[in-house]
Length: 278
Image (cartoon, rainbow, N blue to C red; front, side, top):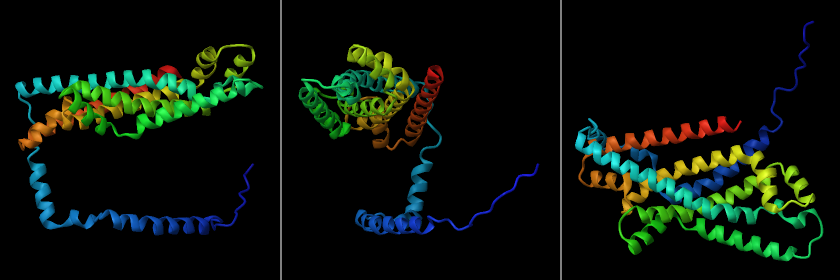
């Protein structure tokens, strides 16, 4: 039996509203664009194009000598170690703070409680600590720790641990708050502790999202550790800084290729872990 297609108006009823909001966005963003001094036409300037071509041509061919590859391998291990240990320490900060901040795990949510104000004060303190941890960029922490502890990976690990601890704790709490809380609520109403309600009622529902975000942050930590190497925190960034200062484009190209491989590996780990938790 042929289906009857009912044709409505071809005009989008929200077209005028979308156009209006688009115009408002352009009006608001244009002064910011002018204030930033951004000029894309500079990229098409013949002199700038020639300079960029000369710079990029220095990246070929990539450096592949055994001596440099050995140094690169050591720097790559330092970068991976810095990112991984930094995230591990960040988890130690993030997990308890996220646990405290998760309002849906509050005993007072299931009924009257005499100590409700204490819970609110504790959550306010946890929220403030997370704000302070993530409010200062990791590169600033790296500069502080390099000045205090000297050059090396230790400064990078501590900088990542502090900043990413704040980021992970904030997002973990939001993920737990937005996940299905019925199982955790039932456990709390039956007399379960908050810890048991968390592990048996909330984490199983939010595991995929928690793991995916953690691996993504580890990938971000790998990138951040490369950047922090420019201020003396070791790893691929410090090696890249040395190569760029010596105008050795071949070495820089090999380092960039290695960095891209690390990002691809992190993406593959994230996909594999998601499939494992399905």
